[in-house]
Image (cartoon, rainbow, N blue to C red; front, top):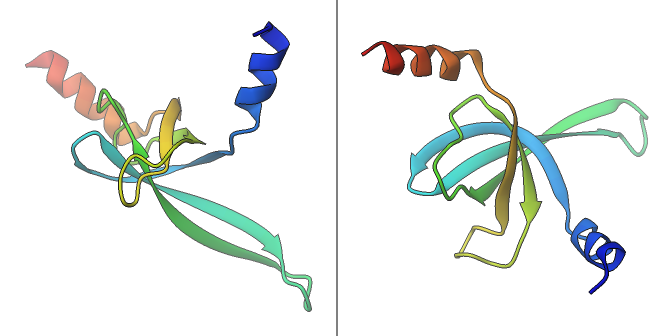
Length: 103
């Protein structure tokens, strides 16, 4: 396959950016994505949230991190997303890492 064809195929997958709200499962994170949409009748911006289960192979994400997830094949009953990258670390996670290094 050519380079452009591979890039076009990958870009078809849906991507979302959200905040990690749970890391209690092994290799799974729960990401809360906030969607802002204008109300159909009143035109006011309405905020709604939705939670997605994402696969995190190395267990690198921490609660509070801002992450990008990408749609993938079904991995389990609820998991249909894969952790693509950690966009921004939370301040809480940075404090925990510093404490772990100090020990």
